[in-house]
Length: 261
Image 1: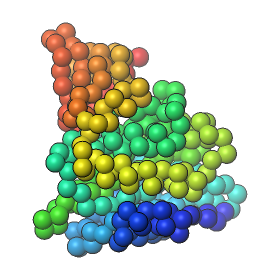
Image 2: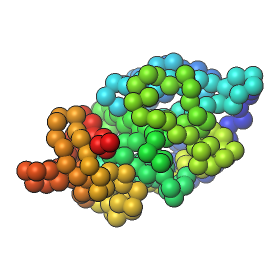
Image 3: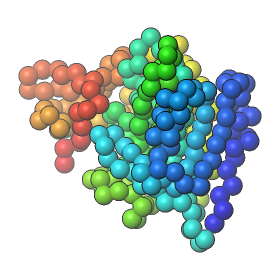
């Protein structure tokens, strides 16, 4: 089943904000993030949207896999996977993944929640994830923002690690929606979000993040053994956990945090 991507409409919307912006859609690639990081290290640092209908070696946080299957003759594309590359110079990079997640959730549906530091959830099931990587190219720091969203309920398409949490799909939330619709819906607000983050950081977004905070008020367990109750995030995007020893601030994305059952 051929997918009709709104590449020209997206380019026309974003071009006034980023005059050197380009859009590229590939039928298959190992990883859109890996590809843009390769290009950045080769000196290609113009803003770009790279979309893949199928990823064979997609990556999530902490080395987890995200394999996406492309459309078949009878089935639509099961997941939307894309990376956005842009040179950024924020005063503080802290909270960027939260800002990106908030932008996506706000563009999609009021019921979508955010799990610190980089996941979108719906009704306690994982809807999608974000992976942000950066490369220094001379004096420029280039950010590659990878996003994967389940459009239809995944079966075997996702890697085994994804099943640590039951999956949700955007068709659970927005029946009938397809990957091209979602891409067009989220991209321009995402660009505006990145420009606002570059100028102001995460602090102005803290209040908007709170109502969507999946971990707020819940019993939590961390991969480093810490247990406590979620108390939201601070102005830098660090997770606040109330423990028996007092309030702990978690800022490292290397620490995995989950609600306790």
